Amino acid sequence: MELTALTAAEIAEKVQNREVRALEVAEAFLARTHKLDPQVQAYNEVFDRLARLQAGSVDAKIEKGEKVGPLAGVPIAIKDNLMIRGEKCTCSSKILENYVATYDATVIQKLRDAGAVFIGHTNLDEFAMGSSTENSAFRTTKNPWALDRIPGGSSGGSAAAVAARMAPISLGSDTGGSIRQPAALCGILGLKPTYGRVSRFGLVAFASSLDQIGPFATNAKDTALVMDAIAGHDGYDSTSVDRPVPSTLAGLEKSMQGLRIGLPKEYFISGIDPEVDAAVRNAVKSLEAMGAIVKEISLPHTEACLAVYYVLAPSEASSNLSRFDGVRYGHRAKDATNLLALYEKSRGEGFGPEVKRRIMIGTYALSSGYYDAYYSKAQKVRTLIKRDFEKAFEQVDVIATPTTPAPAFKSGEKSADPLQMYLSDIFTISCNLAGIPGISIPCGFTNQKLPIGLQLLGKPFDEETLLSVAHHYEKAHDWNRQLPAL
Amino acid sequence: MAISKKDVEHVARLARLALSDEEKERYTTQMGSILEYIEKLKAINTDGVEPTAHPWPVTNVWREDKAELLQGVTRDELLQNAPEKEGPFFKVRKVME
Image (cartoon, rainbow over all chains, first blue to last red; front, side, top):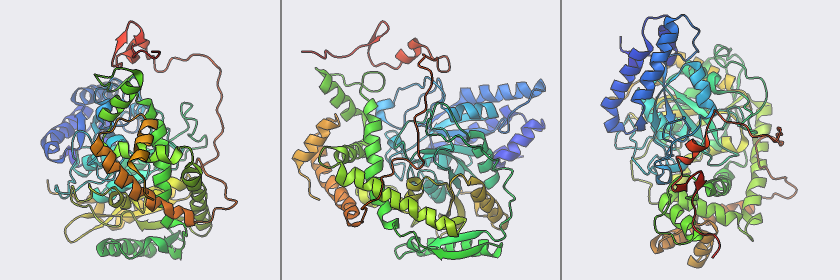
Protein backbone atom coordinates (compact mmCIF):
# COMPACT_ATOMS: atom_id res chain seq x y z
CA MET A 1 0.00 0.00 0.00
CA GLU A 2 1.36 3.39 -1.06
CA LEU A 3 0.67 5.48 2.04
CA THR A 4 1.30 8.82 0.33
CA ALA A 5 -1.44 8.04 -2.20
CA LEU A 6 -4.10 7.93 0.54
CA THR A 7 -6.48 10.78 1.29
CA ALA A 8 -6.53 12.39 4.73
CA ALA A 9 -9.85 10.67 5.51
CA GLU A 10 -8.41 7.28 4.54
CA ILE A 11 -5.29 7.85 6.64
CA ALA A 12 -7.34 8.87 9.69
CA GLU A 13 -9.54 5.80 9.32
CA LYS A 14 -6.64 3.38 8.90
CA VAL A 15 -4.74 4.87 11.82
CA GLN A 16 -7.78 4.64 14.10
CA ASN A 17 -8.48 1.05 12.97
CA ARG A 18 -4.84 0.17 13.65
CA GLU A 19 -4.31 -0.89 10.05
CA VAL A 20 -1.33 1.42 9.94
CA ARG A 21 0.61 3.33 12.54
CA ALA A 22 0.76 7.13 12.48
CA LEU A 23 4.54 6.92 12.60
CA GLU A 24 4.63 4.84 9.40
CA VAL A 25 2.45 7.45 7.70
CA ALA A 26 4.69 10.28 8.90
CA GLU A 27 7.81 8.40 7.72
CA ALA A 28 6.26 7.82 4.28
CA PHE A 29 5.43 11.51 3.78
CA LEU A 30 8.78 12.64 5.19
CA ALA A 31 10.60 10.28 2.79
CA ARG A 32 8.58 11.52 -0.20
CA THR A 33 9.20 15.11 0.87
CA HIS A 34 12.96 14.61 1.13
CA LYS A 35 12.93 12.95 -2.28
CA LEU A 36 10.81 15.49 -4.16
CA ASP A 37 11.25 18.80 -2.39
CA PRO A 38 14.74 19.49 -3.75
CA GLN A 39 12.93 19.94 -7.10
CA VAL A 40 9.67 21.52 -5.95
CA GLN A 41 11.01 23.70 -3.09
CA ALA A 42 7.65 23.84 -1.35
CA TYR A 43 8.99 23.82 2.20
CA ASN A 44 10.92 26.40 4.18
CA GLU A 45 11.48 23.79 6.87
CA VAL A 46 10.58 20.12 7.25
CA PHE A 47 9.69 19.16 10.83
CA ASP A 48 11.23 15.64 10.90
CA ARG A 49 11.56 15.64 14.68
CA LEU A 50 8.21 17.23 15.52
CA ALA A 51 6.29 15.06 13.03
CA ARG A 52 7.77 11.83 14.46
CA LEU A 53 7.07 13.01 17.99
CA GLN A 54 3.44 13.87 17.25
CA ALA A 55 2.85 10.69 15.27
CA GLY A 56 4.39 8.64 18.07
CA SER A 57 2.08 10.22 20.60
CA VAL A 58 -0.98 9.46 18.42
CA ASP A 59 0.15 5.81 18.23
CA ALA A 60 0.66 5.70 22.00
CA LYS A 61 -2.87 7.01 22.60
CA ILE A 62 -4.38 4.46 20.24
CA GLU A 63 -2.31 1.73 21.87
CA LYS A 64 -3.80 2.69 25.24
CA GLY A 65 -7.31 2.78 23.79
CA GLU A 66 -7.67 6.53 24.34
CA LYS A 67 -9.93 8.62 22.14
CA VAL A 68 -8.16 10.40 19.25
CA GLY A 69 -9.33 13.27 17.04
CA PRO A 70 -10.73 13.17 13.48
CA LEU A 71 -7.31 13.96 11.95
CA ALA A 72 -5.36 11.49 14.08
CA GLY A 73 -2.05 10.69 12.41
CA VAL A 74 -2.74 12.81 9.32
CA PRO A 75 0.28 14.87 8.20
CA ILE A 76 -0.45 18.50 7.40
CA ALA A 77 1.81 21.18 5.91
CA ILE A 78 1.46 24.67 7.38
CA LYS A 79 2.05 28.00 5.67
CA ASP A 80 5.04 29.69 7.24
CA ASN A 81 3.01 32.67 8.48
CA LEU A 82 1.16 30.57 11.08
CA MET A 83 2.76 30.23 14.48
CA ILE A 84 3.70 26.83 15.84
CA ARG A 85 5.19 27.19 19.29
CA GLY A 86 8.92 26.47 19.41
CA GLU A 87 9.31 26.44 15.61
CA LYS A 88 10.60 29.23 13.43
CA CYS A 89 7.97 31.38 11.74
CA THR A 90 9.63 33.41 8.99
CA CYS A 91 6.85 34.62 6.65
CA SER A 92 9.58 33.99 4.01
CA SER A 93 11.09 37.31 5.07
CA LYS A 94 14.63 38.19 6.06
CA ILE A 95 13.21 40.36 8.82
CA LEU A 96 11.89 37.21 10.58
CA GLU A 97 14.59 34.79 9.41
CA ASN A 98 15.43 33.70 12.96
CA TYR A 99 12.13 34.35 14.71
CA VAL A 100 10.88 31.47 16.88
CA ALA A 101 7.13 31.40 17.61
CA THR A 102 6.41 31.77 21.32
CA TYR A 103 2.82 30.52 21.09
CA ASP A 104 0.51 28.43 18.91
CA ALA A 105 -1.98 29.99 16.51
CA THR A 106 -5.54 28.99 17.43
CA VAL A 107 -5.81 26.88 14.26
CA ILE A 108 -2.60 25.07 15.28
CA GLN A 109 -4.02 24.30 18.73
CA LYS A 110 -7.21 23.02 17.12
CA LEU A 111 -5.24 20.81 14.72
CA ARG A 112 -3.20 19.45 17.65
CA ASP A 113 -6.48 18.59 19.38
CA ALA A 114 -7.68 16.86 16.20
CA GLY A 115 -4.54 14.69 16.22
CA ALA A 116 -2.88 16.14 13.09
CA VAL A 117 0.88 15.82 12.54
CA PHE A 118 2.79 18.94 11.43
CA ILE A 119 5.15 17.95 8.63
CA GLY A 120 6.64 21.34 7.81
CA HIS A 121 6.36 25.06 7.23
CA THR A 122 5.73 25.96 3.60
CA ASN A 123 7.07 28.76 1.45
CA LEU A 124 5.05 31.88 0.60
CA ASP A 125 5.41 35.26 -1.00
CA GLU A 126 7.00 37.41 1.69
CA PHE A 127 4.27 38.28 4.25
CA ALA A 128 1.75 36.70 1.82
CA MET A 129 2.18 39.57 -0.65
CA GLY A 130 2.24 38.14 -4.13
CA SER A 131 0.66 35.78 -6.63
CA SER A 132 3.56 33.51 -7.62
CA THR A 133 5.61 32.70 -4.47
CA GLU A 134 8.53 34.37 -6.27
CA ASN A 135 8.58 37.11 -3.62
CA SER A 136 10.00 34.73 -1.00
CA ALA A 137 13.34 35.82 0.45
CA PHE A 138 14.49 32.18 0.58
CA ARG A 139 13.42 30.09 -2.42
CA THR A 140 11.24 29.95 -5.52
CA THR A 141 8.63 27.21 -5.29
CA LYS A 142 7.93 25.36 -8.55
CA ASN A 143 4.62 24.16 -9.93
CA PRO A 144 4.64 20.33 -9.64
CA TRP A 145 2.82 20.12 -13.02
CA ALA A 146 5.52 22.11 -14.84
CA LEU A 147 8.68 22.91 -12.91
CA ASP A 148 9.46 25.96 -15.06
CA ARG A 149 6.18 27.56 -13.99
CA ILE A 150 4.96 29.27 -10.81
CA PRO A 151 2.65 27.46 -8.37
CA GLY A 152 0.62 30.61 -7.77
CA GLY A 153 0.67 32.50 -4.52
CA SER A 154 0.91 33.60 -1.95
CA SER A 155 0.35 30.12 -0.42
CA GLY A 156 2.33 28.50 -3.26
CA GLY A 157 4.30 26.20 -0.97
CA SER A 158 1.18 24.79 0.70
CA ALA A 159 -0.45 24.20 -2.71
CA ALA A 160 2.64 22.62 -4.29
CA ALA A 161 3.21 20.35 -1.26
CA VAL A 162 -0.28 18.86 -1.60
CA ALA A 163 -0.21 18.73 -5.42
CA ALA A 164 3.03 16.71 -5.19
CA ARG A 165 1.51 14.57 -2.40
CA MET A 166 4.28 15.59 0.00
CA ALA A 167 1.35 16.15 2.38
CA PRO A 168 -2.27 15.06 1.99
CA ILE A 169 -3.58 18.40 3.31
CA SER A 170 -2.22 21.83 4.17
CA LEU A 171 -3.18 25.24 5.52
CA GLY A 172 -2.83 28.55 3.74
CA SER A 173 -4.10 32.08 4.19
CA ASP A 174 -6.13 34.06 1.67
CA THR A 175 -6.24 37.87 1.53
CA GLY A 176 -7.05 38.37 -2.15
CA GLY A 177 -6.92 34.84 -3.54
CA SER A 178 -3.83 33.39 -1.89
CA ILE A 179 -5.50 30.01 -1.28
CA ARG A 180 -7.82 29.73 -4.31
CA GLN A 181 -5.40 30.96 -6.98
CA PRO A 182 -2.53 28.52 -6.14
CA ALA A 183 -5.08 25.72 -5.66
CA ALA A 184 -6.32 26.35 -9.22
CA LEU A 185 -2.84 26.53 -10.71
CA CYS A 186 -1.68 23.37 -8.89
CA GLY A 187 -4.79 21.27 -9.62
CA ILE A 188 -6.11 20.84 -6.07
CA LEU A 189 -8.93 22.23 -3.89
CA GLY A 190 -8.52 25.37 -1.81
CA LEU A 191 -11.15 26.95 0.44
CA LYS A 192 -11.27 30.50 1.76
CA PRO A 193 -13.84 30.45 4.56
CA THR A 194 -16.24 33.29 5.34
CA TYR A 195 -14.49 36.18 7.08
CA GLY A 196 -14.69 35.52 10.82
CA ARG A 197 -15.38 31.78 10.49
CA VAL A 198 -11.80 30.84 11.41
CA SER A 199 -9.75 32.60 14.08
CA ARG A 200 -6.81 34.64 12.79
CA PHE A 201 -5.02 34.55 16.15
CA GLY A 202 -1.42 33.52 15.49
CA LEU A 203 -1.57 34.29 11.77
CA VAL A 204 0.95 37.03 11.01
CA ALA A 205 -1.38 39.81 9.85
CA PHE A 206 -1.25 41.20 6.32
CA ALA A 207 -4.63 42.94 5.82
CA SER A 208 -6.78 42.30 8.87
CA SER A 209 -10.19 42.98 7.29
CA LEU A 210 -9.49 40.54 4.42
CA ASP A 211 -7.26 37.73 5.80
CA GLN A 212 -8.70 34.26 6.39
CA ILE A 213 -7.00 30.91 7.05
CA GLY A 214 -8.22 27.91 5.06
CA PRO A 215 -7.41 24.39 3.86
CA PHE A 216 -5.89 22.84 0.75
CA ALA A 217 -6.74 19.22 -0.08
CA THR A 218 -7.12 16.82 -2.99
CA ASN A 219 -10.85 16.23 -2.48
CA ALA A 220 -13.94 17.76 -0.90
CA LYS A 221 -14.16 15.34 2.02
CA ASP A 222 -10.61 16.12 3.20
CA THR A 223 -11.28 19.85 2.77
CA ALA A 224 -14.37 19.47 4.96
CA LEU A 225 -12.43 17.52 7.59
CA VAL A 226 -9.89 20.32 7.96
CA MET A 227 -12.53 23.04 7.77
CA ASP A 228 -14.53 21.45 10.59
CA ALA A 229 -11.36 21.12 12.68
CA ILE A 230 -10.32 24.79 12.41
CA ALA A 231 -13.65 26.67 12.36
CA GLY A 232 -15.25 28.42 15.30
CA HIS A 233 -15.31 31.48 17.51
CA ASP A 234 -12.17 32.37 19.46
CA GLY A 235 -11.89 34.73 22.40
CA TYR A 236 -8.43 35.77 21.15
CA ASP A 237 -9.77 37.13 17.84
CA SER A 238 -12.52 39.70 18.31
CA THR A 239 -13.34 39.51 14.58
CA SER A 240 -14.08 35.79 14.74
CA VAL A 241 -17.82 35.33 14.63
CA ASP A 242 -19.76 33.74 17.48
CA ARG A 243 -22.36 31.63 15.74
CA PRO A 244 -23.01 27.88 15.40
CA VAL A 245 -20.61 25.97 13.13
CA PRO A 246 -22.43 23.23 11.22
CA SER A 247 -20.37 20.21 10.17
CA THR A 248 -19.47 20.63 6.51
CA LEU A 249 -18.52 16.94 6.49
CA ALA A 250 -22.07 16.00 7.45
CA GLY A 251 -23.42 18.24 4.66
CA LEU A 252 -21.39 16.77 1.78
CA GLU A 253 -24.20 14.68 0.34
CA LYS A 254 -26.71 17.55 0.37
CA SER A 255 -28.76 17.39 -2.84
CA MET A 256 -27.95 19.57 -5.83
CA GLN A 257 -31.52 19.42 -7.15
CA GLY A 258 -32.71 22.94 -7.81
CA LEU A 259 -29.50 24.57 -6.60
CA ARG A 260 -29.34 27.98 -8.27
CA ILE A 261 -25.96 28.81 -9.79
CA GLY A 262 -25.22 32.31 -11.08
CA LEU A 263 -22.73 33.11 -13.83
CA PRO A 264 -21.67 36.74 -13.48
CA LYS A 265 -21.26 38.15 -16.97
CA GLU A 266 -18.42 40.40 -15.80
CA TYR A 267 -16.26 37.30 -15.13
CA PHE A 268 -16.62 35.80 -18.60
CA ILE A 269 -14.89 38.48 -20.58
CA SER A 270 -12.55 38.59 -23.54
CA GLY A 271 -8.99 38.22 -22.39
CA ILE A 272 -9.60 34.96 -20.53
CA ASP A 273 -7.53 32.09 -21.82
CA PRO A 274 -9.86 30.16 -24.20
CA GLU A 275 -8.99 26.78 -22.68
CA VAL A 276 -9.80 28.11 -19.18
CA ASP A 277 -13.07 29.59 -20.42
CA ALA A 278 -14.09 26.30 -22.08
CA ALA A 279 -13.19 24.14 -19.06
CA VAL A 280 -15.15 26.36 -16.67
CA ARG A 281 -18.21 26.42 -18.96
CA ASN A 282 -18.07 22.63 -19.25
CA ALA A 283 -17.91 22.30 -15.48
CA VAL A 284 -20.99 24.49 -15.14
CA LYS A 285 -22.81 22.36 -17.75
CA SER A 286 -21.91 19.30 -15.74
CA LEU A 287 -23.39 20.85 -12.57
CA GLU A 288 -26.51 21.69 -14.57
CA ALA A 289 -26.78 18.04 -15.62
CA MET A 290 -26.68 17.13 -11.92
CA GLY A 291 -29.81 19.17 -11.24
CA ALA A 292 -28.56 22.72 -10.75
CA ILE A 293 -30.33 25.67 -12.37
CA VAL A 294 -27.91 28.02 -14.10
CA LYS A 295 -28.64 31.67 -14.81
CA GLU A 296 -26.68 34.72 -15.82
CA ILE A 297 -26.28 37.41 -13.17
CA SER A 298 -24.47 40.72 -12.91
CA LEU A 299 -21.98 42.05 -10.39
CA PRO A 300 -21.70 45.58 -11.75
CA HIS A 301 -18.75 46.78 -9.66
CA THR A 302 -16.45 43.89 -10.59
CA GLU A 303 -14.05 46.07 -12.53
CA ALA A 304 -13.39 48.22 -9.45
CA CYS A 305 -12.37 45.31 -7.20
CA LEU A 306 -8.69 45.27 -8.05
CA ALA A 307 -8.30 49.03 -7.51
CA VAL A 308 -10.18 48.88 -4.19
CA TYR A 309 -8.01 45.98 -3.08
CA TYR A 310 -4.77 47.74 -3.98
CA VAL A 311 -5.75 50.67 -1.76
CA LEU A 312 -7.16 48.76 1.22
CA ALA A 313 -4.76 45.81 1.45
CA PRO A 314 -1.56 47.92 1.32
CA SER A 315 -3.08 50.45 3.74
CA GLU A 316 -3.84 47.76 6.30
CA ALA A 317 -0.46 46.14 5.61
CA SER A 318 1.46 49.37 6.17
CA SER A 319 -0.18 49.63 9.57
CA ASN A 320 0.23 45.95 10.49
CA LEU A 321 3.87 45.83 9.44
CA SER A 322 4.80 48.85 11.55
CA ARG A 323 5.39 46.36 14.39
CA PHE A 324 8.65 45.29 12.75
CA ASP A 325 10.89 47.88 14.33
CA GLY A 326 14.11 45.98 15.05
CA VAL A 327 13.53 46.28 18.80
CA ARG A 328 11.50 43.39 20.21
CA TYR A 329 12.11 40.75 17.57
CA GLY A 330 13.32 40.38 14.02
CA HIS A 331 16.25 41.81 12.11
CA ARG A 332 18.12 44.76 13.61
CA ALA A 333 20.51 46.90 11.54
CA LYS A 334 24.04 46.77 12.89
CA ASP A 335 25.27 50.29 12.26
CA ALA A 336 22.40 52.59 13.25
CA THR A 337 23.50 55.47 15.45
CA ASN A 338 20.10 56.71 16.62
CA LEU A 339 16.60 55.33 17.09
CA LEU A 340 15.14 56.72 13.84
CA ALA A 341 18.00 55.28 11.82
CA LEU A 342 17.57 51.97 13.64
CA TYR A 343 13.93 51.76 12.51
CA GLU A 344 14.64 52.88 8.95
CA LYS A 345 17.67 50.70 8.36
CA SER A 346 16.29 47.59 10.07
CA ARG A 347 13.16 47.79 7.93
CA GLY A 348 15.01 48.82 4.77
CA GLU A 349 17.33 45.80 5.11
CA GLY A 350 14.75 43.33 6.38
CA PHE A 351 11.85 43.78 3.94
CA GLY A 352 11.97 42.67 0.29
CA PRO A 353 10.96 44.78 -2.74
CA GLU A 354 7.24 43.84 -2.95
CA VAL A 355 6.67 44.35 0.78
CA LYS A 356 8.35 47.76 0.64
CA ARG A 357 6.30 48.69 -2.42
CA ARG A 358 3.05 47.87 -0.62
CA ILE A 359 4.09 49.64 2.58
CA MET A 360 4.84 52.69 0.42
CA ILE A 361 1.49 52.58 -1.40
CA GLY A 362 -0.41 52.04 1.85
CA THR A 363 1.44 54.81 3.67
CA TYR A 364 0.77 57.14 0.76
CA ALA A 365 -2.94 56.27 0.67
CA LEU A 366 -3.27 56.93 4.40
CA SER A 367 -1.16 60.07 4.48
CA SER A 368 -2.52 63.54 5.16
CA GLY A 369 -4.21 64.99 2.11
CA TYR A 370 -4.80 61.64 0.35
CA TYR A 371 -6.82 59.71 2.93
CA ASP A 372 -10.22 60.78 1.55
CA ALA A 373 -9.27 60.43 -2.10
CA TYR A 374 -7.88 56.92 -1.70
CA TYR A 375 -8.61 55.07 1.54
CA SER A 376 -12.04 56.47 2.31
CA LYS A 377 -13.11 56.29 -1.35
CA ALA A 378 -12.01 52.65 -1.59
CA GLN A 379 -13.97 51.75 1.54
CA LYS A 380 -17.11 53.27 0.02
CA VAL A 381 -16.67 51.36 -3.23
CA ARG A 382 -16.16 48.24 -1.08
CA THR A 383 -19.70 48.82 0.23
CA LEU A 384 -21.00 48.85 -3.36
CA ILE A 385 -19.14 45.61 -4.15
CA LYS A 386 -20.60 43.98 -1.06
CA ARG A 387 -24.11 45.09 -2.05
CA ASP A 388 -23.64 43.56 -5.52
CA PHE A 389 -23.17 40.18 -3.85
CA GLU A 390 -26.08 40.68 -1.44
CA LYS A 391 -28.35 41.35 -4.42
CA ALA A 392 -26.95 38.42 -6.40
CA PHE A 393 -27.53 36.03 -3.50
CA GLU A 394 -31.21 36.96 -3.48
CA GLN A 395 -31.41 35.22 -6.87
CA VAL A 396 -28.84 32.42 -6.63
CA ASP A 397 -27.26 30.11 -4.03
CA VAL A 398 -23.79 29.85 -5.54
CA ILE A 399 -21.78 31.95 -8.02
CA ALA A 400 -19.47 30.18 -10.48
CA THR A 401 -16.47 31.82 -12.18
CA PRO A 402 -13.00 30.90 -13.41
CA THR A 403 -10.54 31.07 -10.47
CA THR A 404 -7.86 32.65 -12.65
CA PRO A 405 -7.91 34.21 -16.12
CA ALA A 406 -5.08 31.93 -17.31
CA PRO A 407 -3.15 28.81 -16.26
CA ALA A 408 0.19 28.99 -14.42
CA PHE A 409 2.67 31.34 -16.08
CA LYS A 410 6.41 30.83 -16.38
CA SER A 411 8.70 31.82 -13.51
CA GLY A 412 10.04 35.34 -13.99
CA GLU A 413 7.45 36.23 -16.64
CA LYS A 414 5.63 38.89 -14.61
CA SER A 415 8.26 39.83 -12.04
CA ALA A 416 9.19 43.13 -13.67
CA ASP A 417 5.69 44.62 -13.79
CA PRO A 418 3.80 44.67 -10.47
CA LEU A 419 0.52 45.68 -12.09
CA GLN A 420 0.56 42.68 -14.48
CA MET A 421 1.20 40.42 -11.49
CA TYR A 422 -1.72 42.00 -9.58
CA LEU A 423 -4.04 41.26 -12.52
CA SER A 424 -3.66 37.51 -11.99
CA ASP A 425 -5.87 37.92 -8.87
CA ILE A 426 -8.63 39.67 -10.77
CA PHE A 427 -11.31 36.98 -10.13
CA THR A 428 -10.45 36.12 -6.54
CA ILE A 429 -10.33 39.54 -4.85
CA SER A 430 -14.08 40.34 -4.73
CA CYS A 431 -14.68 37.40 -2.36
CA ASN A 432 -12.36 38.88 0.30
CA LEU A 433 -13.81 42.37 -0.10
CA ALA A 434 -17.34 40.98 0.39
CA GLY A 435 -16.24 38.65 3.21
CA ILE A 436 -17.98 35.63 1.63
CA PRO A 437 -16.61 32.07 1.31
CA GLY A 438 -14.97 30.86 -1.90
CA ILE A 439 -13.49 27.60 -3.12
CA SER A 440 -11.43 26.59 -6.13
CA ILE A 441 -11.87 23.06 -7.45
CA PRO A 442 -9.99 21.33 -10.29
CA CYS A 443 -12.08 21.37 -13.49
CA GLY A 444 -9.70 20.39 -16.26
CA PHE A 445 -6.32 20.76 -17.89
CA THR A 446 -4.96 22.73 -20.83
CA ASN A 447 -3.42 20.93 -23.82
CA GLN A 448 -0.07 21.47 -22.13
CA LYS A 449 -1.42 19.62 -19.07
CA LEU A 450 -1.66 22.69 -16.85
CA PRO A 451 -4.46 22.58 -14.24
CA ILE A 452 -7.56 24.79 -14.47
CA GLY A 453 -9.74 25.83 -11.52
CA LEU A 454 -13.45 26.52 -11.12
CA GLN A 455 -14.26 29.09 -8.45
CA LEU A 456 -17.50 28.82 -6.48
CA LEU A 457 -18.55 31.70 -4.24
CA GLY A 458 -21.17 31.18 -1.54
CA LYS A 459 -23.44 33.04 0.82
CA PRO A 460 -21.87 34.17 4.09
CA PHE A 461 -21.22 31.18 6.42
CA ASP A 462 -22.40 28.69 3.78
CA GLU A 463 -19.18 26.72 3.29
CA GLU A 464 -21.39 23.65 3.45
CA THR A 465 -23.00 24.23 0.04
CA LEU A 466 -19.66 24.96 -1.64
CA LEU A 467 -18.17 21.73 -0.34
CA SER A 468 -21.23 19.67 -1.26
CA VAL A 469 -21.11 20.97 -4.86
CA ALA A 470 -17.39 20.14 -4.99
CA HIS A 471 -18.13 16.69 -3.63
CA HIS A 472 -20.84 15.94 -6.22
CA TYR A 473 -18.68 17.30 -9.04
CA GLU A 474 -15.78 15.01 -8.06
CA LYS A 475 -17.95 11.94 -8.32
CA ALA A 476 -18.40 12.64 -12.03
CA HIS A 477 -14.85 13.78 -12.88
CA ASP A 478 -11.36 12.68 -11.96
CA TRP A 479 -9.46 15.99 -12.44
CA ASN A 480 -8.67 16.07 -8.71
CA ARG A 481 -7.30 12.52 -8.73
CA GLN A 482 -4.73 13.08 -11.48
CA LEU A 483 -1.11 13.30 -10.42
CA PRO A 484 1.78 15.35 -11.78
CA ALA A 485 4.70 13.31 -13.17
CA LEU A 486 7.54 14.00 -10.76
CA MET B 1 -0.95 60.12 -11.40
CA ALA B 2 2.64 61.26 -11.54
CA ILE B 3 4.53 61.31 -8.29
CA SER B 4 7.99 62.73 -7.73
CA LYS B 5 11.10 61.34 -6.11
CA LYS B 6 10.50 63.89 -3.38
CA ASP B 7 7.06 62.38 -2.67
CA VAL B 8 8.67 58.95 -2.47
CA GLU B 9 11.25 60.25 0.01
CA HIS B 10 8.51 61.84 2.14
CA VAL B 11 6.44 58.64 2.20
CA ALA B 12 9.52 56.51 2.94
CA ARG B 13 10.24 58.70 5.97
CA LEU B 14 6.64 58.34 7.20
CA ALA B 15 6.92 54.56 6.75
CA ARG B 16 10.34 54.43 8.46
CA LEU B 17 11.93 52.78 5.45
CA ALA B 18 15.50 53.46 4.36
CA LEU B 19 15.57 53.22 0.55
CA SER B 20 18.55 53.21 -1.79
CA ASP B 21 18.67 55.71 -4.67
CA GLU B 22 17.91 52.91 -7.07
CA GLU B 23 14.83 51.90 -5.04
CA LYS B 24 13.61 55.50 -4.92
CA GLU B 25 13.82 55.76 -8.71
CA ARG B 26 12.04 52.44 -9.20
CA TYR B 27 9.25 53.18 -6.73
CA THR B 28 8.69 56.61 -8.25
CA THR B 29 7.81 54.97 -11.58
CA GLN B 30 5.98 51.93 -10.18
CA MET B 31 3.92 53.82 -7.59
CA GLY B 32 2.99 56.28 -10.31
CA SER B 33 1.51 53.59 -12.52
CA ILE B 34 -0.22 51.79 -9.62
CA LEU B 35 -1.77 55.05 -8.40
CA GLU B 36 -2.85 55.84 -11.94
CA TYR B 37 -4.67 52.51 -12.04
CA ILE B 38 -6.31 53.26 -8.68
CA GLU B 39 -7.49 56.64 -9.99
CA LYS B 40 -10.31 54.83 -11.80
CA LEU B 41 -12.20 54.72 -8.48
CA LYS B 42 -12.83 58.45 -8.83
CA ALA B 43 -15.27 57.78 -11.66
CA ILE B 44 -17.57 55.76 -9.37
CA ASN B 45 -20.37 57.67 -7.69
CA THR B 46 -20.27 57.04 -3.93
CA ASP B 47 -22.49 59.90 -2.77
CA GLY B 48 -24.29 58.88 0.39
CA VAL B 49 -22.53 55.50 0.53
CA GLU B 50 -21.19 54.44 3.93
CA PRO B 51 -17.62 53.10 4.01
CA THR B 52 -17.02 49.41 4.82
CA ALA B 53 -14.11 48.78 7.19
CA HIS B 54 -15.03 45.17 7.97
CA PRO B 55 -17.24 42.61 6.23
CA TRP B 56 -19.53 42.29 9.26
CA PRO B 57 -20.33 44.84 11.94
CA VAL B 58 -17.72 44.38 14.68
CA THR B 59 -18.09 45.57 18.22
CA ASN B 60 -15.49 45.89 20.90
CA VAL B 61 -15.07 42.81 23.06
CA TRP B 62 -14.45 43.52 26.71
CA ARG B 63 -12.78 41.41 29.32
CA GLU B 64 -11.58 42.02 32.83
CA ASP B 65 -8.44 44.17 32.96
CA LYS B 66 -6.30 41.44 34.40
CA ALA B 67 -2.99 40.05 33.17
CA GLU B 68 -3.50 36.62 31.68
CA LEU B 69 -0.81 34.10 30.90
CA LEU B 70 -1.05 32.91 27.27
CA GLN B 71 -0.18 29.24 26.84
CA GLY B 72 2.24 29.64 29.73
CA VAL B 73 4.62 31.87 27.74
CA THR B 74 7.31 33.38 29.98
CA ARG B 75 9.16 36.68 29.75
CA ASP B 76 12.41 34.80 29.14
CA GLU B 77 10.90 33.05 26.13
CA LEU B 78 9.72 36.34 24.65
CA LEU B 79 13.15 37.88 25.18
CA GLN B 80 14.76 35.01 23.25
CA ASN B 81 13.68 36.75 20.06
CA ALA B 82 15.11 40.17 21.05
CA PRO B 83 17.96 41.30 18.78
CA GLU B 84 19.62 42.98 21.79
CA LYS B 85 18.73 42.66 25.46
CA GLU B 86 20.12 43.38 28.88
CA GLY B 87 18.77 41.49 31.86
CA PRO B 88 14.97 41.42 31.56
CA PHE B 89 14.92 44.40 29.13
CA PHE B 90 14.96 45.11 25.40
CA LYS B 91 17.97 47.25 24.63
CA VAL B 92 17.42 50.28 22.35
CA ARG B 93 19.44 53.25 21.08
CA LYS B 94 19.31 56.45 23.07
CA VAL B 95 15.95 58.15 22.49
CA MET B 96 16.86 61.57 23.94
CA GLU B 97 19.90 63.37 22.57
